Length: 78
Image (cartoon, rainbow, N blue to C red; front, side, top):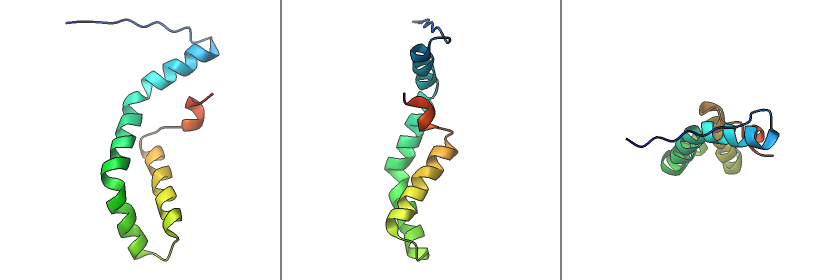
């Protein structure tokens, strides 16, 4: 079995950012999968059930996904 060891200097801001991005990569991939495969259905249903603006429904759903998958985009972008 192949193995890799990656070392980061967490006291260095750039390396710490790269570390956080790697650690959150699975959560981000799951968020994107959910967004791609299930969001249209969920947003369509919610838009039909409420009087809210469609854009509001969509962005509310996207923000909920970020919370659900614990992805803080502001923490991952310089």
